[in-house]
Image 1 (cartoon, rainbow, N blue to C red):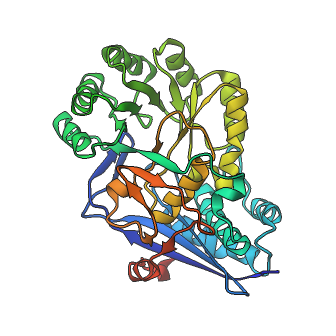
Image 2: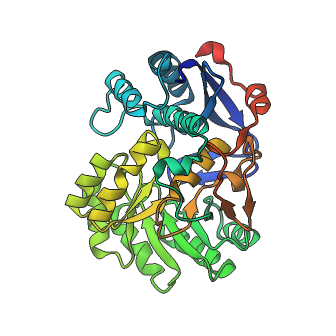
Image 3: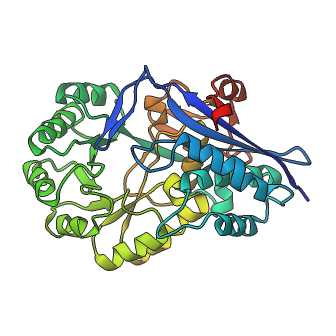
Length: 376
C-alpha cells in the first residue's frame, strides 16, 4: 500500500508566444510569461503524480502566492502518510481544513493537488486517468481556440492562420458596434467555423442583447458566454429570456451547488465546465448530472494551463458529450506545454491511454523557470 511521503510545489513562469486579452483584462504576451503552479506528489514506493494550475487573478481571486502557500502550508501536511487511493478521505480532510464558504474556497490550489492525486492513482493502478471516470467516450478531442480581443482585421487573420480549426471562442469587449465587427471579421475568415462569443462579464443585459441583434444573421454563432458580471444572475436571466441563441454561464458558476441555484433561477442554457474553478476533476464532474437533469448543455474550457492541466481536462472531457469542441488554449498561446507525449494533429488531440495523465512533465523546464520562492 503506497503512502505519500513528499509534496513539492513549483511556482513557475511559462512563456507566451502571443498576446491574450479578454473582457476582464490582460492575460499575457510574449514579454510577460504566465505564472503556473506545479505540484509533484511522491509515494514511499516511488510513484509520482503531477498537477498544475495557472494563476490568473484577473479572472478569479487566487494569486501565484496564495496557490503556492495554500498547497505548501495547508494542504501538503494533510497528505503526508496517506494512501493516495483513498481519495474521498483526502478530499474530506482538505475541505475540513479549507472551507468552501458560499461557493468555493481556494479551488485553484485544490485543483492542482487533485490533478496530481489522480495522476498518482492512475500510475499506481496502471490505468489512464480517463478510466478513473468510467473511461473515454472518444479517442480524440477536437479543440476550440480563443481569439484575443484585438482589431477585427487581426482577429480575422489569426482565425485564418488556425485553419482547419472548426470552432473559435471569440473574445469581446463590451462595445456592440466594435464587437460586431470582430465577429464578422472572424466569420469571414473562417466561414464554416462555429463561433462561441465570450464576453467575460464585459456587458450589461441591454447592450448584450444589442450585440446579439446586430449579428443575428450569422448562423454559425452558437452561444454567448458570461455576458454580465459573475454575481449578476438576474442579469443573466434577463439576457437569456430575450436572446436568440443559448446563453452560457462560466464565472458565475464555480460548483454544482451554484449550478443547482442557476437551474432554479433559469438564467442559463449551458454551463462551462472548468477543472480549476471547480476545485478538481471530481468536483467538476459533480456538475454534469445537475446540468443533464435540468437540460443545460455542457461546454468544456480551461484557463490556458500548460500541458499537465491541459491533458487532465482532455481526459475528463473525453468522458463527456460536449456540444462544442473543448476550448483549451495552451497549444495556441504558450511557448511550451512543459510536457512530452501530447499528440495534436489539425487541432485535434489524442486522448492518452498510458497510465495516469499519460504524459511526461519537463521537470528541467519547470525547475529552471522557478519564481522567487523565498518570498512565498
